[in-house]
Length: 321
Image 1: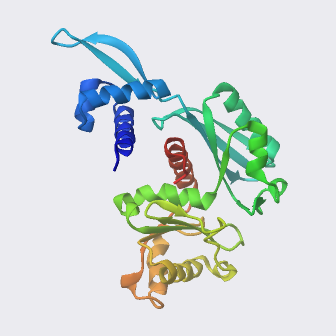
Image 2: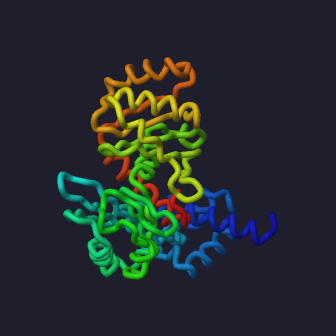
Image 3: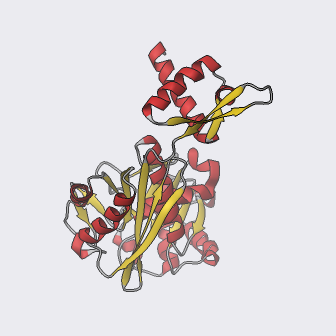
């Protein structure tokens, strides 16, 4: 590693430590990072010039010497996270603004009978007008862009549109689209703790009579395939009774991916169905190879958690993983 690389690495270490501490002094940053006070001083100057840090006040230490305090500028960049789910005959859009601490600084809910690009633009523009520091938008919804066109059965007005490009042209912010099951699977990673960092987790969602869709988490990174729609399963996995469908799906996923964990999102399934699902699946695959199974009748909690964690990642690191 040359001097330039070392400088950049130490600058990142300093920035991350300042973010964790929120407000601190040079000696405390040196202690937190293991870097010298001289190095911390140089990096703080660079971070102040970049707008990532600022000197906030002078205080007096016990020894009577002034101890300058530095603050991480959490509102330098903001992210707008939003996700849509059906509610009766309508759709609800939940939106929230995140700062660099991962704190929610604003939020709202809006209900509509028809999800259109104009509806989304109106909701997003209201936030951007109030919070111009918003640099990116992450939108969760039922569908995905394939070759630049949005494919969905849930929102007729959006079908076939170049949705992310269209929204960008209207709000002048990049918009990342994320399928609901992808977000939910990412959000469910927290249920497995440290295991999610080293293993494969798969979430599966059934919508009405449609074929089930998967979200695939490889070592806490979403895998969406070459064109972004990996995880589409066969129609025959939604033709029979719910427990039998789940058992056949579990067998298929075990043979294809051999995952550590599987989460089923299906309003017809309950935790009490798990034993029966495993019993049926074990007739096809030895029980010792079957993954840990979670059943979550309602996708919304993990869906929202996934959008939150991915928006935070995108804001901090520039990628939604």
